[in-house]
Amino acid sequence: MNAAPAGTLLPCRIDGAPVPHGPRVWALRTEQRPTDARAEREAARLACRTALAALLAAELGCAPSALQITNQRGQAPRVSAVPPVWASSAQAQVTEQAGDQLAEPWATQLAPVRLSIAHAAGWSLVAWHRGPVGVDLQDRAALQGLDAAERRRLSVLYLGQDEGSNRALAQARRAPEAIKNEAFAARWAAHEARLKCLGQPLQEWSPTLQAALAGCTARSLTLPVPMADAARGWAGAVAWQDLRAPGHAGR
Image (cartoon, rainbow, N blue to C red; front, side, top):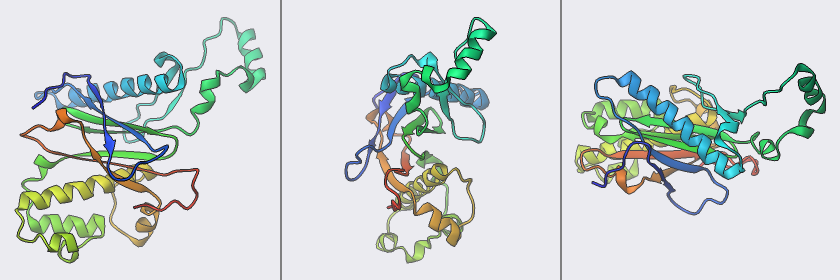
């Protein structure tokens, strides 16, 4: 295994055909605290927002401290410019009247930017895109205890897919359960990424949900080499909408 210290930020590649102007995704090595899962997750949340601020600042040409990223549990992070601190109320009033004329040029580029974060033990994914975006990371090792009946129940209930009628899986019925769980993890990651892209919670499959999810493109991710831990496998996915292409269909 290639080790990566906590705080290491590594780019991920979107699988398939090139995606011009597509989302940008990175893996972030985070600190593990086996005896305090809550503190570990809070530290990961902070590290991800710090990393996103640095990445966006480099893209926009501003200082990371000029950006603020929300940290509301259960909500996707959002980025905005840090309001300037004025020396007097009179100066603040003049600035308010001037409106956008005094705004930094880079600040006008923030409006379409959307962010997404996914956490797992020891690693997180961060993504940004000039439009809706969602990213997800699944720990395949956590699914090794999933039996065929439970996997099929979850597939039908949440993914709208019956494994028994899935051609690819039907051809691999004799494959070990571990391989089937890996395929399930990849499908689940793509599904969660689409839900995040739409700002939706996990919910039972329905025709309405199917129609909404079709508006997102979803792709699996090639994760960086340091994540290829022999004792742990990962499935990563990103989903997005291109606001410049109305009617863009998911794949």
